[in-house]
Length: 131
Image (cartoon, rainbow, N blue to C red; front, side):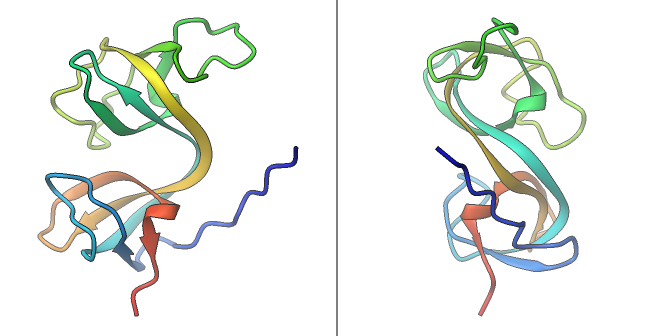
């Protein structure tokens, strides 16, 4: 099966319309300003308390089995390794063991909300060009 990688939709400095909720800070319909473009794998993970968190970039996680053919396969475990000031959620500390729910290649973005707050990792498919 061939995977089709779409080019990024936004560049730094552009405005984007958010299509999804990233509670509690972002609701659908809000505008954000793109700060930085990233390309790579994003992962949704299950936290120790059972809550799902989106998104961690794969480079923020260390898979439990680094030598597996697919170390970020759903159901496998990884440890959070990065809190480099990219807006990592304060309730998820470095060293937390998480369960992989889903990882996939995509473009994703750092952004600034209209209220001036910083938000990391809005996936390209979660954003649209404002009308």
